[in-house]
Length: 70
Image (cartoon, rainbow, N blue to C red):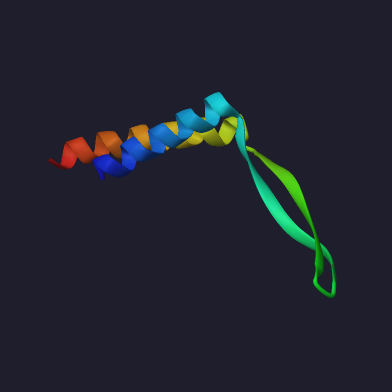
């Protein structure tokens, strides 16, 4: 349980400070015989601050409960 709490806290802090993440998606637009047209799209995913703070709080609760059971 302690490990889960620490992971939640770290992920919450990462989401809070970065605000989200982005990735590149490659799609095929047209394929005519041996020719192929591909497009690279950059997608951005925003992580809401309330979700990050909730993950930090939940991680803290799980971490405290993990220490109480020991």
